Image (cartoon, rainbow, N blue to C red):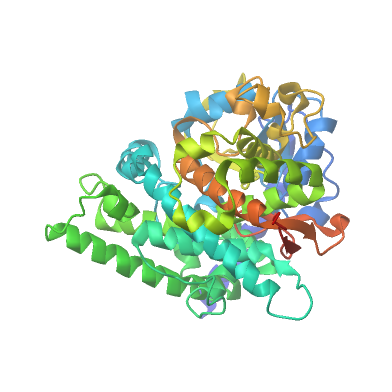
Length: 508
């Protein structure tokens, strides 16, 4: 017993000594001590917090630098922050496989969806991405337009139902309804299952899962835990936040796994679907490149990203339409004159050509995506000694970040009106007037760029067109009270965007 006690005391003493070294000694001898750093305040105030999106925005303006800033994160861990496109090109394209997804963020993705394309590295990443590519092929676009138009009309009907469910016009939590619609859509397209969360919003299969991605103390606590403990230990420790997240994802994970196994079994027995419109994402994945476990894990990833990120992105577009009613009116006029009354959409089969006639719709979406990118920070970690922007990275494990919010608003890249909501910038220039493709970081860049970008944009076009053609939106809250806040994965509207949706009055 005495030996165990002494060993425990020694372990605690070593942990304290290591912490003291990292906090008090290492910063004075760090190889990055020559880089500019922001004033982050006393360490006791920030020891258990990570700088957020708004810190990076402030530093971009206030800290003179040549592309790299040194700062400190949770537990005083040293980090480097990239602030220009030259650094992004090197980090994400030229030397992309010298830097892996940072450990804490990779752990969170693994926890939610297993080992998948987001966290795969090197040659494994190339193989997995190649295996997933057919699921996001442009050949599936006709199917997407049909599916997205149908689920968009389901959303319109759900809003109509809420509008008529009481004597007064109710305030609608649009954030929640968009997440429900997103989950229903990706469930159908990924594994052919009906979550039916729009019609049964309190169904036990999806309610907890959707709640998990809300802005909450649990999200912040889980982030801290991911920084402190390795993934294998997280699975065993009885943290309430970890258990909550595991329980909330359980039912949806079970459904996706079951449906994916069923689809793979049908393929193995020669029951492969011939018509592209009948195939779901799992049907399209290349079984010669992906193991059954990889198919299941990546299907879970698509379900997670497909409902959370698209729902959040659409929420912010509607927010901007409320903030700029003249944009909303102009957009509605374009949509109605091109696609007709949304009430008649059931009898139509839209194609990409129809939406190609709506450049202003795409401009509005682009501008919202620019100012409100879903994932606010890109995290990387060096895997080998390297050089970044002429700064030596002498050892592996150096954490490097880049802010999509700051880059998307960088006046050097976008001009003096970089922070203004101006959809017209996209009508004159396919790049919105930006100097580089790396100025627009919403979907990332390089070999690890979001594989589902075209999928997401197509769904956003269909859903936004149906919503704007059907309703006039206004806020149920004071606009000053609508604030961005970090959720489990994306930057969301704090406590959801609550709106009034007045049906559009049609001329007789």
